[in-house]
Length: 209
Image (tube, rainbow, N blue to C red; front, side, top):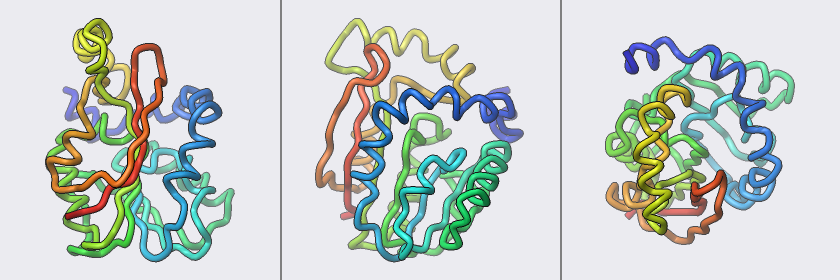
Protein backbone atom coordinates (compact mmCIF):
# COMPACT_ATOMS: atom_id res chain seq x y z
CA UNK A 1 0.00 0.00 0.00
CA UNK A 2 2.82 2.42 0.86
CA UNK A 3 4.51 1.78 -2.50
CA UNK A 4 1.21 2.23 -4.34
CA UNK A 5 0.70 5.59 -2.58
CA UNK A 6 4.18 6.67 -3.54
CA UNK A 7 3.53 5.82 -7.19
CA UNK A 8 0.35 7.90 -7.17
CA UNK A 9 1.84 10.71 -5.15
CA UNK A 10 0.63 12.38 -1.99
CA UNK A 11 -1.87 15.00 -3.05
CA UNK A 12 -2.80 16.36 0.38
CA UNK A 13 0.74 16.29 1.73
CA UNK A 14 1.89 18.28 -1.29
CA UNK A 15 -0.93 20.77 -0.74
CA UNK A 16 0.08 21.28 2.90
CA UNK A 17 3.85 21.06 2.60
CA UNK A 18 4.63 24.76 2.22
CA UNK A 19 2.62 25.52 5.36
CA UNK A 20 4.08 22.59 7.30
CA UNK A 21 7.65 23.59 6.42
CA UNK A 22 7.26 27.36 6.79
CA UNK A 23 8.58 27.52 10.36
CA UNK A 24 11.58 25.35 9.55
CA UNK A 25 12.37 27.45 6.51
CA UNK A 26 12.29 30.64 8.57
CA UNK A 27 14.36 29.19 11.44
CA UNK A 28 16.86 27.16 9.45
CA UNK A 29 16.35 27.28 5.69
CA UNK A 30 17.30 30.93 5.28
CA UNK A 31 20.65 30.14 6.87
CA UNK A 32 21.30 26.63 5.58
CA UNK A 33 20.28 26.93 1.93
CA UNK A 34 22.62 29.85 1.09
CA UNK A 35 25.46 28.10 2.93
CA UNK A 36 25.22 24.78 1.12
CA UNK A 37 24.29 26.28 -2.25
CA UNK A 38 27.10 28.80 -2.62
CA UNK A 39 29.54 28.55 -5.52
CA UNK A 40 27.58 26.04 -7.57
CA UNK A 41 28.63 26.95 -11.10
CA UNK A 42 28.12 24.55 -13.98
CA UNK A 43 25.60 21.72 -14.18
CA UNK A 44 23.58 21.12 -11.03
CA UNK A 45 21.19 18.32 -10.13
CA UNK A 46 18.64 18.82 -7.39
CA UNK A 47 17.25 15.51 -6.15
CA UNK A 48 13.73 15.83 -4.77
CA UNK A 49 12.99 19.50 -5.31
CA UNK A 50 9.55 19.28 -3.67
CA UNK A 51 7.59 22.47 -4.22
CA UNK A 52 10.68 24.47 -5.20
CA UNK A 53 11.96 25.94 -1.93
CA UNK A 54 15.53 26.00 -3.26
CA UNK A 55 14.82 27.65 -6.61
CA UNK A 56 15.37 31.26 -5.58
CA UNK A 57 18.81 30.44 -4.11
CA UNK A 58 20.42 29.22 -7.34
CA UNK A 59 23.07 31.31 -9.04
CA UNK A 60 21.94 32.63 -12.41
CA UNK A 61 25.01 31.13 -14.05
CA UNK A 62 24.23 27.54 -13.07
CA UNK A 63 22.28 25.14 -15.27
CA UNK A 64 19.93 23.21 -12.99
CA UNK A 65 17.94 20.03 -13.50
CA UNK A 66 15.52 19.55 -10.60
CA UNK A 67 13.94 16.12 -10.18
CA UNK A 68 10.85 15.20 -8.17
CA UNK A 69 9.01 11.84 -8.20
CA UNK A 70 5.69 13.03 -6.74
CA UNK A 71 3.42 14.48 -9.48
CA UNK A 72 1.58 16.73 -7.02
CA UNK A 73 4.80 18.20 -5.66
CA UNK A 74 6.07 18.59 -9.21
CA UNK A 75 2.99 20.54 -10.24
CA UNK A 76 3.55 22.99 -7.40
CA UNK A 77 7.22 23.27 -8.31
CA UNK A 78 6.18 24.14 -11.87
CA UNK A 79 3.97 26.92 -10.51
CA UNK A 80 6.81 28.25 -8.33
CA UNK A 81 9.24 28.17 -11.25
CA UNK A 82 6.80 30.07 -13.46
CA UNK A 83 6.32 32.70 -10.75
CA UNK A 84 10.07 33.18 -10.36
CA UNK A 85 10.68 33.23 -14.11
CA UNK A 86 14.00 31.39 -13.92
CA UNK A 87 15.08 30.08 -17.35
CA UNK A 88 18.08 28.12 -16.00
CA UNK A 89 16.03 25.48 -14.13
CA UNK A 90 14.55 22.43 -15.85
CA UNK A 91 12.08 20.14 -14.07
CA UNK A 92 12.03 16.36 -14.54
CA UNK A 93 9.84 13.73 -12.88
CA UNK A 94 12.16 10.99 -11.65
CA UNK A 95 12.82 8.99 -8.46
CA UNK A 96 16.16 9.24 -6.70
CA UNK A 97 16.71 5.51 -7.19
CA UNK A 98 16.56 5.74 -11.00
CA UNK A 99 18.05 8.99 -12.28
CA UNK A 100 17.70 9.32 -16.08
CA UNK A 101 21.17 10.75 -16.66
CA UNK A 102 24.53 9.49 -17.91
CA UNK A 103 27.47 8.82 -15.62
CA UNK A 104 29.57 11.82 -14.56
CA UNK A 105 27.01 14.37 -15.78
CA UNK A 106 26.79 16.95 -12.98
CA UNK A 107 29.27 19.26 -11.29
CA UNK A 108 27.13 19.49 -8.15
CA UNK A 109 24.19 17.67 -6.56
CA UNK A 110 21.95 19.09 -3.87
CA UNK A 111 19.27 17.43 -1.75
CA UNK A 112 17.36 18.98 1.13
CA UNK A 113 15.12 16.91 3.40
CA UNK A 114 14.89 14.18 0.77
CA UNK A 115 16.78 11.05 1.79
CA UNK A 116 14.49 10.44 4.75
CA UNK A 117 11.74 9.49 2.32
CA UNK A 118 13.42 7.71 -0.60
CA UNK A 119 12.47 4.04 -0.80
CA UNK A 120 16.03 2.77 -0.81
CA UNK A 121 18.82 5.01 0.49
CA UNK A 122 21.57 2.68 -0.69
CA UNK A 123 20.36 2.69 -4.29
CA UNK A 124 19.59 6.43 -4.24
CA UNK A 125 23.05 7.38 -2.99
CA UNK A 126 24.64 5.02 -5.51
CA UNK A 127 22.73 6.79 -8.27
CA UNK A 128 23.87 10.18 -6.99
CA UNK A 129 27.46 8.97 -6.92
CA UNK A 130 27.11 7.63 -10.47
CA UNK A 131 25.87 10.85 -12.09
CA UNK A 132 28.22 13.18 -10.14
CA UNK A 133 31.53 14.07 -11.77
CA UNK A 134 34.62 12.75 -9.92
CA UNK A 135 35.54 16.23 -8.71
CA UNK A 136 31.93 17.24 -8.00
CA UNK A 137 30.23 18.11 -4.73
CA UNK A 138 27.19 16.70 -2.99
CA UNK A 139 25.40 19.27 -0.78
CA UNK A 140 22.83 18.03 1.74
CA UNK A 141 20.44 18.97 4.53
CA UNK A 142 18.70 16.05 6.26
CA UNK A 143 17.16 15.13 9.60
CA UNK A 144 18.58 11.97 11.13
CA UNK A 145 18.25 9.49 13.97
CA UNK A 146 19.19 10.80 17.40
CA UNK A 147 21.98 8.44 18.41
CA UNK A 148 23.08 10.77 21.22
CA UNK A 149 19.91 10.11 23.22
CA UNK A 150 18.60 6.63 23.90
CA UNK A 151 15.18 8.08 24.74
CA UNK A 152 14.79 10.14 21.57
CA UNK A 153 16.37 7.53 19.33
CA UNK A 154 14.00 4.85 20.63
CA UNK A 155 11.08 7.27 20.28
CA UNK A 156 11.98 7.85 16.64
CA UNK A 157 12.10 4.09 16.09
CA UNK A 158 8.71 3.55 17.73
CA UNK A 159 6.86 6.32 15.89
CA UNK A 160 8.43 5.50 12.52
CA UNK A 161 5.49 3.47 11.08
CA UNK A 162 2.84 6.10 11.80
CA UNK A 163 5.22 8.98 11.04
CA UNK A 164 5.98 7.39 7.68
CA UNK A 165 2.27 7.11 6.92
CA UNK A 166 1.48 10.74 7.81
CA UNK A 167 4.74 12.10 6.41
CA UNK A 168 4.54 10.77 2.85
CA UNK A 169 7.13 8.05 3.40
CA UNK A 170 9.42 9.98 5.76
CA UNK A 171 11.61 7.86 8.08
CA UNK A 172 12.63 9.94 11.13
CA UNK A 173 15.26 7.44 12.27
CA UNK A 174 17.62 7.02 9.34
CA UNK A 175 21.40 7.28 9.77
CA UNK A 176 21.80 9.28 6.58
CA UNK A 177 25.35 10.51 7.10
CA UNK A 178 26.58 6.94 7.49
CA UNK A 179 24.66 5.89 4.37
CA UNK A 180 26.24 8.76 2.45
CA UNK A 181 29.72 7.68 3.48
CA UNK A 182 28.97 4.03 2.78
CA UNK A 183 28.04 5.03 -0.79
CA UNK A 184 31.57 6.30 -1.40
CA UNK A 185 31.27 9.97 -0.51
CA UNK A 186 33.82 11.76 1.63
CA UNK A 187 32.42 14.36 4.03
CA UNK A 188 34.28 17.65 3.57
CA UNK A 189 32.33 19.44 6.30
CA UNK A 190 29.13 18.84 8.23
CA UNK A 191 27.26 20.79 10.87
CA UNK A 192 24.52 19.64 13.21
CA UNK A 193 21.51 21.47 14.63
CA UNK A 194 18.47 20.40 16.62
CA UNK A 195 15.26 20.82 14.65
CA UNK A 196 12.04 19.39 16.04
CA UNK A 197 12.26 18.19 19.68
CA UNK A 198 14.77 15.37 19.87
CA UNK A 199 15.39 15.40 16.12
CA UNK A 200 18.90 16.30 14.92
CA UNK A 201 19.46 17.74 11.47
CA UNK A 202 22.72 17.72 9.55
CA UNK A 203 23.86 19.83 6.64
CA UNK A 204 27.11 19.96 4.79
CA UNK A 205 29.19 19.14 1.74
CA UNK A 206 30.65 15.86 0.54
CA UNK A 207 32.66 14.74 -2.47
CA UNK A 208 32.71 11.52 -4.41
CA UNK A 209 35.86 9.45 -3.99
